[in-house]
Length: 265
Image (cartoon, rainbow, N blue to C red; front, side, top):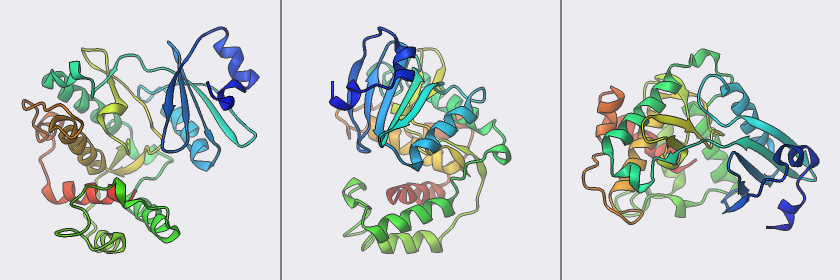
């Protein structure tokens, strides 16, 4: 265990008692995650994003199956968030990928769970304008990393550079279909008990935005998890089946737009 995790605040230690956790690694954000049977402890450098994450979890409580905030403390520049653990398996697990009917049903259930929440009541914004502003700031400050993008996004056949993509996105805004969106709607963030959808994790991007943000990211996640991008190929999975499962006609233009928008965020 790292020195940082050895310094667990008393308020969190009181909830955990004598439980023993397992270190789940270090994420890109610098977060460390400790897994317990019934809790998850996330520790990372404190910033406004972490505070928003807690606010989103608390707002979603009772509206969607998300982790409950058990304790939260910011101390010495570190953000400590103890949450209940969503039970079940991520949709990217082989046993779920081998059951396309379950996989697609769970994705559709997850989408409709969010869409059933009135967008007008959501205090968090994740509109195209919000995402474009975030992207513009990242490009301006040099924090944007093009190595995370799809290989065809830039270069031959793609956009010349991030600025060119940003300008294209600004000049090709599609009509908006406002709903509550997850913002990172990918298979590792969705859970099932083997029968139905059981919950979301990593909800820091939740907000009122366009329906196609989640549809596009879900489609791409299905594609990458089934076409060998991560190793195994699942030929029986057709990413386009997501639209049929969700009851939404495929829109090629919006699909492309929101995948490209995500490249800059």
